[in-house]
Image (cartoon, rainbow, N blue to C red):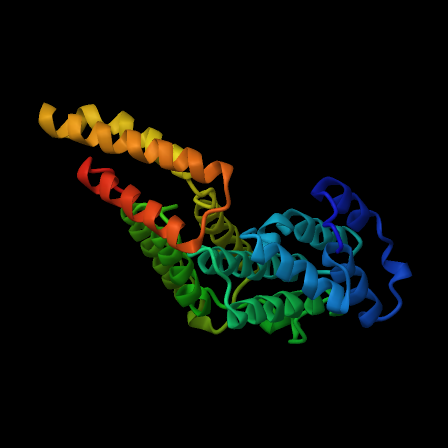
Length: 283
């Protein structure tokens, strides 16, 4: 079984790979995909193995993918606009992987979709472009709105983002789409307008990416304990919750030493959500 290369070493290899040595788009595709996960069946096997272990290989290799993109921009093989679009599209695949991972199981259809979407991005990188012309290279802000909002909703479901923060993100994206529509009244965007839109899109992506760290059950239990004194509950209710909290602490510690089943993880999640609701922790 192939072991994934550490990110730091992989980023160095990718950045150092000379563009001249990659003679054809297929050569480049093999190098890009192979450096990350192997090639052909080996690549699929590496990804499948990681997903079966409940890991997020595409998220783990995001820095390496971005390093490859940046290296091609520095080498003049990719435009800055294509690079920004590639990174945004990769972030969308990572968000999809996170959503599929939430229940601890990747279905065959989910694994296939992730592999296909990742393969498409590596093909774009190998071809040094999306295949459309320069004026159409940049996807309109409005076109990405539905996907952005889906990612935001997934972050809320995964308890990485509060509903208030999610509403603000959606409103800010809608406002940016309106700005783009205003710029396009004369049928085209100036270079300055494109740069402005791209910068604001990057800022929105950064805010969403900032919610990418999933709180562990132990971190959530600690937050519950901290919130208890200001929950507004009476002392008897607080005492009962502390007993339940202690039970969950022991259960979480036992799961940390073992490999819990999907049902066991779901049970722990239900108990955590119940306690968070009762002590009025909003996410």
